Length: 167
View: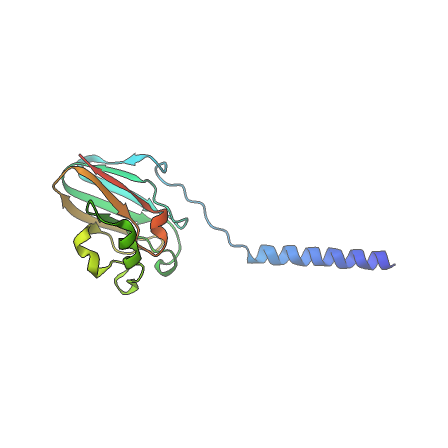
């Protein structure tokens, strides 16, 4: 009889643990970026598109454009609110100290993590986006070169960064 009671208690514990675990699990929808992570993205007439996800990633780490006016669209394909998983895209001038920039940006919640003291280092930036939002910006680059881009939301630049190659 004692073995039966022990077995019943054990089955009950396992059942409750499994039920609680399943009830607390959250399913994160998988998103498939429109491009492979290392694939270069460029479209005609200096019109660029890049996506960001709830998994803290851009859809590519390299964009290509020609000298002149560039139209860039950032789409946040996730579902999370910008207060939790906000993304932007900032294009920096060559020579900008990225570590110093992101440290200052992390303290600038009131300006959506765009540090006022670093405005001179920024070529262009999107607004901070939450899941399902997008922003399109236009800017001009007059010299060929390689320009860093990143997300300035605290901690994101470790993974969300890349290069804009202007030819």
